[in-house]
Every structure is written in structure tokens, then in C-alpha cells.
Image (tube, rainbow, N blue to C red; front, side, top):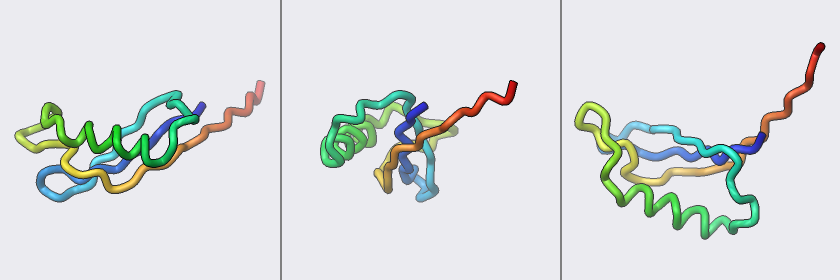
Length: 70
């Protein structure tokens, strides 16, 4: 399974990790970054009065390989 994993700074300066399953692998790094920046400008995701997506820090593809045992 492939995931897009992104790290954002929240409104109090702490890191917040977010992931998305089965992302489009054909997008360029700039296209992905632009979409993540859009997510950070929405201002609709809060927890305990802390905005979760204030600034994009980094993003990467994470691939999980499952090997059946039995």
C-alpha cells in the first residue's frame, strides 16, 4: 500500500502528521506541495482551539509491503 505522509506545523508550532492512502503517483513534487499548501490555508481543522495545518514542513511517499505468513 502506498501512502502520502505529510508533516505540518500546527498553530502552536508543534508538528502534526497527516497521511493519505493511495495517492496519485503521477503528480509532480510541486503539484503535491501546492495541494498541501492549500490544505494549510483552509483553517477548518482544529482540535482544542489549535489549528492543525498551519504550515507544510515535509512530505514523502511511504510504501508498506505486506508478506503473508500463513
